Image (cartoon, rainbow, N blue to C red; front, top):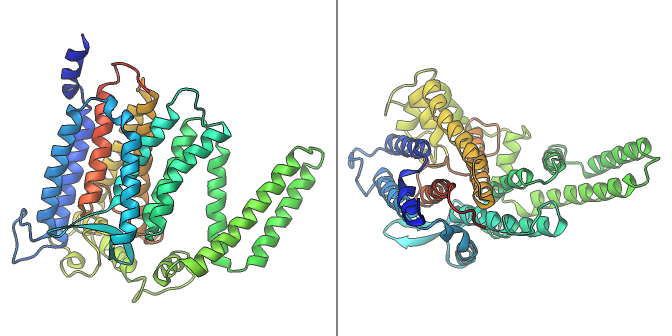
Length: 426
């Protein structure tokens, strides 16, 4: 088969399982948004005066975008990865100047007609793309310090700009890309260190005693030094690690006391059990758990949820859309939705492992990491096991920027996968 015939066959060589799950999740999202914000004055599913009408438009735009992506040349995405990254960085800077503040975050650019663009959503796609482009370059080994630092900068720069909005939820999503670096050869000790820093973060806030925590770290370091006293090469590593951990503890304390806004601190305090405020800042999470629990096994039925119908849970069409699923579809429906996500992530990993191109493999793992993180954190915050940091449930939550971003991510992957039997490119 020549190149022209091969290119024409790409559209028919797509992974239809991923497309099926994509369409299923979009449909589930549309139906649940309709139920969550139903307006008797605008009952039509496609009424553009409602969020469910706008979501229908977003889905159509997403499908058109997906078809266009499938018709493009696969090399296009690798070649223009720096351009996409640069555009999103510019948008992230622009939003800090002229962005619209919603819910305490200056994260949206108004497009008129009630439509808004959230650059941080598009930044997830462009970061995965550029990271794949760099790590798949000739003679780049992420295990080498220079390559690791450059990869970290690619991930860290948009994180920094998004944190300035400040949007803690979107910022944390980028940390999931550590799994990409791990897959490409970074030591598993970095995953252990990430877990250690999470533990230190919790302890610093929970105990609120810097002297106790720092003293504990010093004692721990002394014990390890005593155990390895005969190995002099280990001593500099342990002392450096101790210094980094102490610096991290003081940084967390400064961030928590001086940088985070009061509502953000209260959300963390509620999850960690430091305080209880079910009628104030903890109201969303408490009502969310009530809604999900009231659905029992089979749910109350479509548009029959009392928590949903009477708007007891704020942001129920966006960040807390999973409450609608739990209340109206019950445990059975929630399991189906989570099963679709699990299938999607595992399918993406399978797609990644069958790629002949390093670029495609790395990009696929980036997408799997982002989707997995979104689902775990979003569902976790609706049932009260992680702080309410405000990130959408992929393809289900209301929002054009989120839907378009995940659509582009998935269809670019589908396109790259359809070309896996063709030329291996960088």
